[in-house]
Length: 150
Image (tube, rainbow, N blue to C red; front, side, top):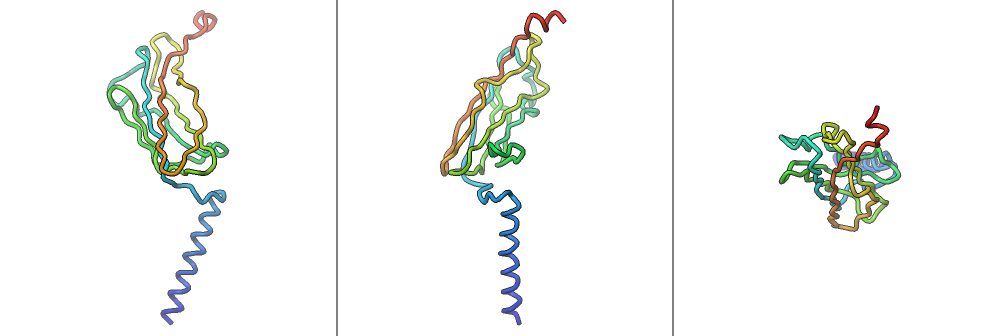
């Protein structure tokens, strides 16, 4: 009787694991060993740079064809007057990934411009145990003369 109970429990566990995998869109590698890390530095005219000014910064990694499906374990913190980030546990040797960095809504430009990230964000493809570094700089896009007059 005990053997039958154990066999039924093991079988139901195996079926449950198979079902949860298919619920993720058929992608078995939702977690992995890849890492993306980097810094986001702010130009002099971008502020404020006091306290935890990185708090509103958004850093996410998703499959390029499913941007709403956020992957990995994220960490963002203030480090040496800049924002440092790390996203670990990312799938590797799989589909293309997209790193998205969005400036904090609290950041303002001294010239009334819009905080903009440079360089442009590009797709990402990680190999097993790869740590990719992607650094960004937040600058102020100068408002056009037409917008400044309004």
